[in-house]
Image 1 (cartoon, rainbow, N blue to C red):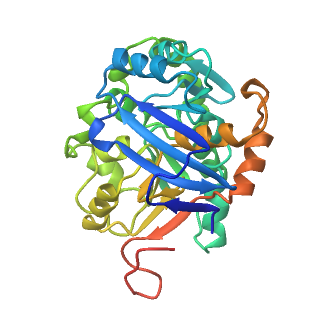
Image 2: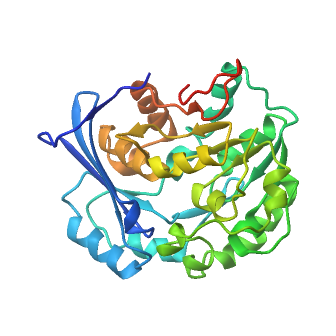
Image 3: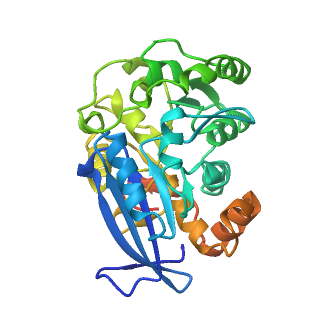
Length: 324
């Protein structure tokens, strides 16, 4: 059980975090919660792919909130330990002078790696499972953790990011290709690499279905997973975040067996890692530049934030269930 106390009506606010997203404004959400005795306002504001509007909002709110999250875009993509800055994201970060700006990468290497331990504790074996990882360069911690757990990986970075049907099956190959291509790809307009704005609301395209059907586990960004998601997900597990109630209901309709939510729920919404990192930054009593991974780990432990297993379809004893 985490240390989140959701609040229905707006209280007197102690801390405020805002995720400025390039995603669809239809997915906007506002939540109030008490965390470690502090009352939070947590908000996601979509700009429908409009980078100029995102910059304007960041400038307007700079210094008025405790931390910003960047949604619908990453600041960095990863090739092993080396990170590459995305040019469009840097424009957003540089629009802010006073408020910390995070994209979730600070906790992806902590919280997402915890998925393995949570599944092991639940008696779910991973060794030998076939995993479709939609994109590893933005979730390298999760990709590496699944690989080290003995999963048979298929990295879909070419398929989902570039629309090129070339699967990558070896970690060594992934790192080599990433080091070659990321210096170029990170300079392209981000909309060429990731669905932003109204693209996030489009129905799944029936394409590349074979990669889903051949996988036991589908892991990665939910918008990438949704992009080519087949109608039938019977017997499969999805590991992801950034989900609405509508998204979860859609997964139920498609008979998904197990959903692993990497981030905690706030009033019916599983925010992205950028929001969770913004919350941590606002709670850690240190200048932003001095915060370390150990600080993140300590705060995650205090908040009791950990991935959650949700049995959407059939539990082990055959009974339908909707919680862990």
